[in-house]
Amino acid sequence: MKIGIVLYPTFGGSGVVGTELGKAFAAKGHQVHFITYSQPVRLGSFRENIFYHEVAISDYPLFEYQPYETELTSKMVDVVKYEGLDILHVHYAIPHASAAFMAKQILKSQGIHIPFITTLHGTDITLVGKDPSFEPVISFCINESDAVTAVSESLKSDTYKLFQTKRPIHVIPNFIAPNIEPSNGLGEVRRKYACDGEKILCHVSNFRKVKRVEDVLHIFSIVNKQVRSKLILAGDGPERHIIERLVRELDLGANVIFLGKIRDTAHVLEISDLFLLPSETESFGLAALEAMAVGVPVISSNTGGIPEVNIHGVTGFLSNVGDIEDMASNALNLLFNEEKLTTFKNNALARAHDFDLVKILPMYEKIYFELVGKSE
Ligand code: GMT
Image (cartoon, rainbow, N blue to C red; front, side, top):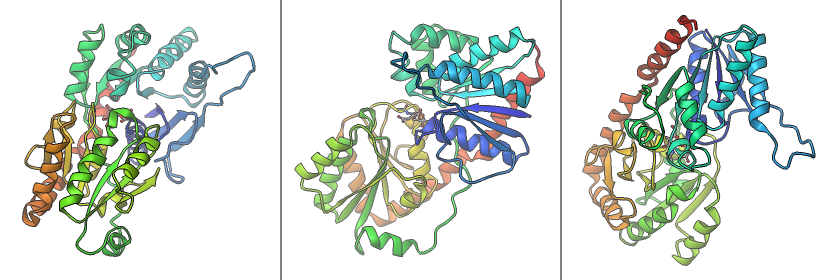
């Protein structure tokens, strides 16, 4: 099959999921064409069956805002037509689903049928999407997509609550890609960040308000008073300067390490004892699953789709959003008890296998085949 994948090529979860999915389909022998404005960060080096089509963004002086959606649409039309794609899979509703709808109509006028599948990832529905200025477009795109998937039951139910749609939404959870190469000399790497006997807590995000990175610091501040520990923060984003200031205010400078944006977080997670994810809302929490996949228990909020991934009292603990005292006490509960921590680490690893790519890939593939087999 020839598959076109449209995504945000950045560090965000939707881009990671779209890219890993494309890589997996290419490995299975499908031809995969990524269509986006820059090379997806997780794409890696040259691979068989993978093609990348860059959407060039013009800077015509008349436009105060460049019409990305229009340029994306034109590129989609071009790639479908000249590469002979069978299906388009767009990750994130805005503006990818509306561009796909438009591309589909243009191609239809030229006698070409192209089905498109839209995967809803979270903020396109729960934050950006519920903004009244986007609502009519998103409702329309959900209704016009040939198939719609959501990454959790929670996101599916939010979509029905927030949008005018009754159409079936398939829940296909996010997954773990099997390309994490175990690193050598973990102990040595660990010693670069923490002294012997110190614990390492970790948080990875895009430092947006919704991630509540301030809570991460407050939790760590409580933990650090009772357990010798370090906090590693990976990622970057609009809240980072606030967080840096808070680190100074809380006098945590010696114990908090900012790594900034890194491509491969697995190696940072591997040296961590606990992962903190106190988000305001989270449709799935891919970062938590990635932590669990290398055996790191998760201390998180109980919002959105997180409880579908992190099991309270088994793979970590869940608390109400903003309840930093409870999250800190849950972290200490594990850090004080080495045996319990080891059990939770093993549980986290085992739970992550429920989300192995081999289990998830056929769910998408089934939809692709159904749509491609069906002509309008
Ligand atoms: O978390 C973000 O802000 C990025 C966003 C994205 O679209 O890249 O993540 C969303 O999609 C991820 C992949 O499906 C999910 O794991 C995240 O939970 C979801 N983020 C939110 O719902 C806030």
